[in-house]
Image 1 (tube, chains in turn cyan, purple):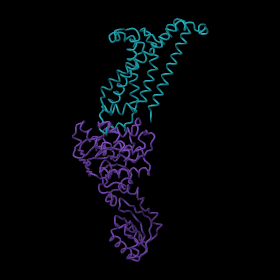
Image 2 (cartoon, rainbow over the protein chains, first blue to last red):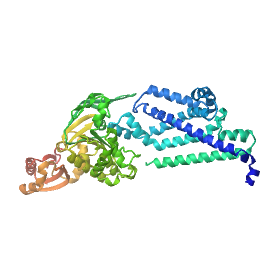
Image 3 (spheres, chains in turn blue, purple):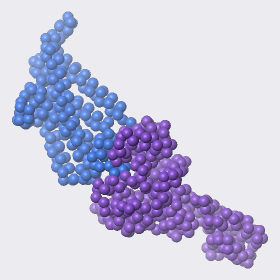
Image 4 (tube, helix red, strand yellow):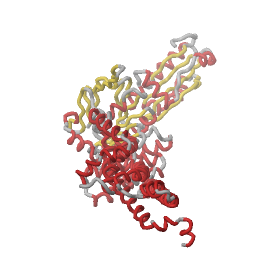
Length: 226
Length: 344
């Protein structure tokens, strides 16, 4: 304790804030990851099955959807946060705090997941889809019983990559007062010249990223029977 | 059981159009094993995929049983497909599911109550000899075992027809034979109609009752396996036969080495082969015969093959020998007459 007080006085002083920031980051990342996956995975599947020569070809729709996703992916996140302030005010009644950040985090990362899932689902062997068709499967059955289970390890990897990305984005969400480790590193640590806080928050971010990546890799490997 | 009428399939791309199937008529009987043989690009794969409408014809009608598939709306077609099992060259199993769950997939799709799955899957795995592999994943199986799972899966909804799209082409010869045995057994036990396509003559001769030879989107020969392959009308068919008999034509080079004397090509079909024709020829006519080259194969209980023989003697002996063999039902061709030259 004595050692900590001399080397990292501010970390000790602001410890409660750091703990709070950790929870804010975890909260923002997990909730926005959940919603991004719930929106992004179906969009990814839709991008595949509506493409030419797939289950339900709708080329026009497919191109429009792809275009919208590209636009959302082109907008820098920091700009997205600001553009979406009125939207989050309408949607959840506030434009500041972690909840407001979640809106922009979801809008920013759902299209990313959609593209990754698209790649994963497109990899599903055409022969297996054909086998299901020969059994009389409906499009819906093919999605649930073939496309999703067969691409699940890759989808888990996609979600993992997105989770790591979200940790980075969540730092920028400090703009709308979302809090979190990244924001703390920037405001207290960098702008406040408290190098020990900058150091400790960064270490926690590294631990978080490592943990998520390891967990994701583990689940993906467990699911993969190829 | 299956009837294809005037099936034409045109594939279009930006370079033009291509007739994969050109006005094909085909009728497959209930309970038979029907083989379709052809080189790649002949249209056989497209043809077999017409039989469950995985490929839709540009024109023509497809009927399976009493149902005209080409007239059905999507939902009815899906129902009809449950009664048409299909086995694939690359097995097309789901690696994410265990063997048992793979076999249960068609049951899930057909909406069979879950409690009935286990029993049915067990029966099917016993039928294909993989009862002990129920909880393995496909990646842990050999090619032959994977195809057995594929067959069990295709049979899950008790189909009337089993379509095999190059089912043995990815397997080694020994495994091929064991899969063919299994198909034959299933055909006998369950009385289901089997249609298989292949580029291997061996598959046809081993289990098929009837065969269609395809080339450039057309059926060029059709009939009982023995008939088609004992009296081939086209070069393509002859080439396929030589895959199994190995009876290549004698080269001019070989002929010169044999020297003068009567040289006959005898094509055997059916019973005559069983009667030791050559030894009778030697005994009854008192001629000397040397066998140059040849092979006799058994094709579904009936033997057939080609034998090149040399008969020693004068023109009279030659005429007698030819007449004798013809009387015995052997198809004789004089390749080289006794004076040399001959009707090559």
